[in-house]
Image (spheres, rainbow, N blue to C red):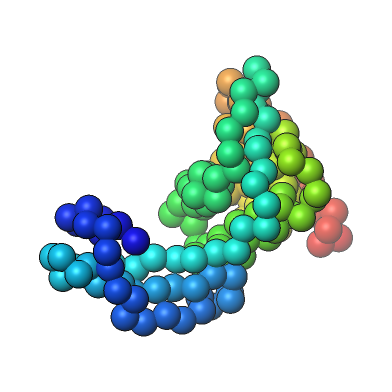
Length: 156
């Protein structure tokens, strides 16, 4: 593993343990050149999946991008990182076990929307504003009212 500090190609694993949700292995490493310590995570990847984006562009599925967009929607909300990690892992598992080599970005967006709906209503609305390309305040109002109605219906 390449050292992020000096770019040396050799490092030693000093400690390995599963993460809290047991979906990856956390490894503490030490660079054999500069002695710096750093952490890496190892996850199982079931298959290579290509995401088909708008305009027929294609790119490899990237867990990091998924995690970043969900974390951004949950920013400054009382959502534990563990819940975000569980949502990301669940979506990644769905994508990789779907049995398809390609998946439309819209389907991933819907998976995120479904997950955020049950996690945090503000994060759900934030993500929807970007995903559905809200252009006016009225778009927020209409979507927020449907979220409120759905929540009232579920309680009622």
